[in-house]
Amino acid sequence: MNFEEILEYLGHFGSYQIVVYSLVCVPSVLVGIHIMASVFLMGIPKHRCFIKNCDNSLSEFEEPWFPYSIPKNDASGVKGFSQCFRFQKATSTGNVSCLATDFRNTTEKCSDWVWNKEEFQWTAVSEWNLVCEKSMFVALSGSVFMVGILVGALIFGALADKVGRKRVFLFAPPLLVLSSVGTAFSPNYVVFILLRFITAAAVSGLFQTGYVVVVEAVGVSRRLWCANMLQVVFAFGELLLALVAYFVRNWRTLELVIAGPTSLLLVYYWILPESIRWYISKEKFEKARRTIEKAALWNKVDMPDSVYTSKNTSFCDQDSKKPTAGIMDLLCNPCLRRRTLNIAFNWFVNSLVYYGLSMNAGNLGGDVYVNFVALAAVEIPAVILGTLILSCVGRKTLLSAMLLLGGLCCVVNPFIPTAFAWAGTTLAVIGKSQIAVSFAVVYVYSAEIFPTVVRNAGIGFSSMCSRLGGILAPIVANLGTFYEPLPMLIFGGTALTSGLLTLFLPETRDQDLPETIEDAENFGSSIKQLPKKYFPDDESHTSKKLQEGTVSHNDSLFENVDEHLDLLG
Image (cartoon, helix red, strand yellow):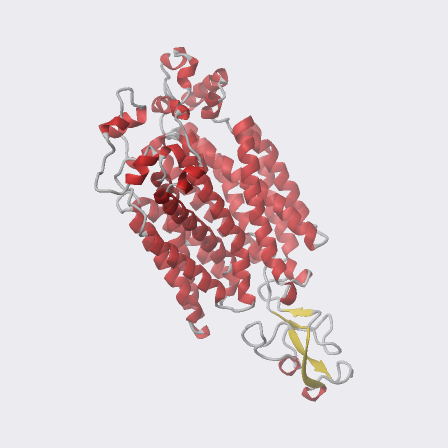
């Protein structure tokens, strides 16, 4: 008996799974908070040059000498007055003489700034003057954070497979607590980005491992919904972050406040049950039996003696013995190479635009807090709706439509007049909702396109491309300091391109998953079912259920969990 058969006795989503899912939701909320915290920690307040002999430590943002001491429309393309240049002072006459006649018509670079504290009281940007020539350091910190997410996924992913899922919760939470608290006391920028890198690695490990625990615990009939709802939980974390950041506008205090709840995770090693599937895969059958008995007690079901009297080897999924191939098998085959690069670009674009729009909240016009809340809140109905219609609309059609609509919203956004800032924000919110849906769809669509023998390799390669998009997202968002419309044009242009390229991919709805390279080459033809030879007499539990019609196509995608854990990207 394999673990899917054990779940048929335990139940797909009983009290045991509900408790596990609820426990995993807590770190998922905190992950949403820490990943998006850079929007407020590294927020760029409105600023102007500090005018020597006129300004002092008590100067307001708008002083009488402001209009004639600073040039308009500087080379950076910032609307209104320059943020990086000032007119040279003709004489050093002190604060009592800061008249228009005291300034020459020649400009000089600023070395200090006066900050507008309406939106942000104090951020890492204003503390370390990371503007103008140093503005690249803002984007660099975001990119380093995304690299940390990639590194964390690799390290904690391997750790979870080797020593167990719950042991990740022995190492990652203390790392997160120490790095996030340490960030609040960073003495300089270098220490700041180093600690943020560690924070990123920790939250990546927590989210990835939590995702695995959930997918391994619930039955096939609930896996798709449970997996996608974690994205909704992530969005709730973003909303909580916006609420806290609105009332706590000093970046060091804010970091301490969001670091506090992470201490709740320090006890997870002792309260979160280990994955039964992991126990079985490591042949720890006695521990698996005790956990199964506990789950059965919570779910109020009786497990038949046959579950325990069967040979231990029957616990193991036989799918793991199937022959596999590698990424080179995908790239060397012309047909699969085109599809693989197309899907990989799709993942890249989804990650680039998803994170880019969130990080670009401060550049949309209007209030940064309102923009951030709108961009986060729209994910909740979008993901729910996308999951609902995924089973009745073709994957290719839905994915292409979402990318095209989202890209169109982004491209139009920069051309909205400043007098209608609300319209620009609305377009950005609509665009974010489309990308949230396409991100949810591409997870499922990718696993259906790649044949079984190279599915892990294909999704792993796509996931790496997704991380590359996340790394570039802060850099693209920061390009607005040079030309304000550029970030939205890049987000929109790449989304439109990806949406059009998606039309060249085959439709996978109501089709059996390809098993071999040959199946994948023929995938998308008029033949709806795979030949009989792919369902031999000793066919697997999944194949039988598919032919008998007792499980949906979406469910079959997730039945062999070990094959698809790379979906979590």
